[in-house]
Image 1 (cartoon, rainbow, N blue to C red):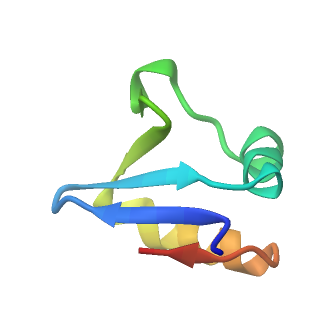
Image 2: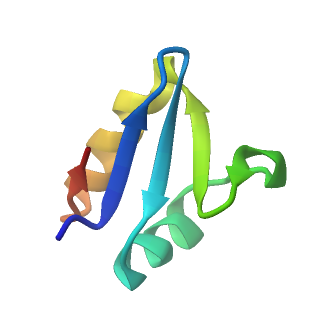
Length: 65
């Protein structure tokens, strides 16, 4: 099982933390505004999404689609 599920919606990419380690990574490393959350998923512009994925993977976590 992946730590995050990423969903490409064209101009935005949704990220859903699926594990406790994923939530801890977000709490410690990523500033997310309240308006970015929709349900259990937050959204970022597609341009910095790859940088976020690279950071997640560098931290030893996984991203699935």
